Length: 442
Image (tube, rainbow, N blue to C red; front, top):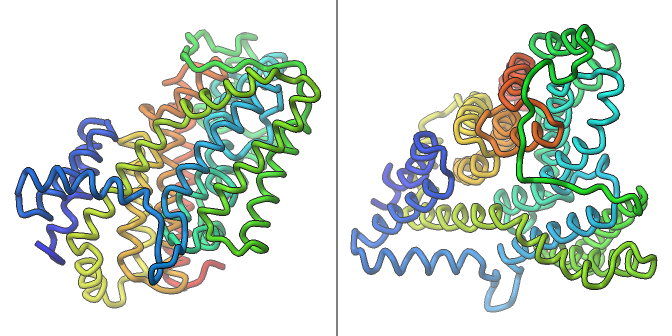
């Protein structure tokens, strides 16, 4: 089965099962089992052993000639857990969330909770507020180089130079750029389209921002403390960025280690900033570790499963098989960015998770062995398509979270934003076609 179509089957199983069941965990784990059976030639005992050997190896450090070359995926896991702690700390201290980009979950919760009472005074419909909060949160996260998204995406593209690899994708990531530009222009000019316009007119006419619809509730809540200031957000995030950059450029560490070290420094800095001013007690500070780890647990599970699936596909020779396909495509590789954009849109919309989508599809793109602009365009196309699904899928936990934080009706807000999102996606598709054909991002 090595180097043949069978090498691609585990990844395809993950996609198909996710589309059918809408459950990412089950689909990823089932695909891992199938990959292990293929690798071990259907020896069940060896296959079970292979699953957990590869899962453990996914955390392992990287060695070059017997010398430690990097922290491996373990550094990414540590950094994401540290981000969860930082978010919990800033939440507890009352740092405002309007500038937060390290975590889209907290961005939605904080921005929705803060802005909803304000927008109600001006009769802005809850659907429009949820649309803005959701679209901005995911678009900013996918474009910022210091975030949980950036660390995972960069490591998936290039384990050795994750930050540099992620930076290359930013300019090609057309959908989030177009979405942010559209929001800025439409809000500045007071122009609303389709379902959002209908909701706005109804809210103004009836003076009812819910437009007579029942708000979606959720167990996810956020308490806005009156003690904190904007600096209680800006300084910890600034400490995180500066410390990561210093570890990268002055200590000459690998990306994953730099992120893990920077996260630790930022937490220590936050403790020094908060405790002397009595924004929280020492007990509350330590409690944030548990809260932060809990908030990020689902992401960690998805990452471990996705990394293990990639290792199974590599053991089956997926790279060699895809290289043969790429050779046969000859001059048609310029179509790949548009094709992968559409595939990522469909998958992320159907399964409701952007992380699950790009963690499965980015390794496939990397194995195509593309070069130059086409390589970065195709990866960015997967990321753009994943963002679309995250924003508009009715089964996405983040759309439900946006509706809950803004006290909007979940399904009505999803339906209202859909036409606008599809138009922007169509423009992004044309952009990927044009960029692929011209072989240049500009």
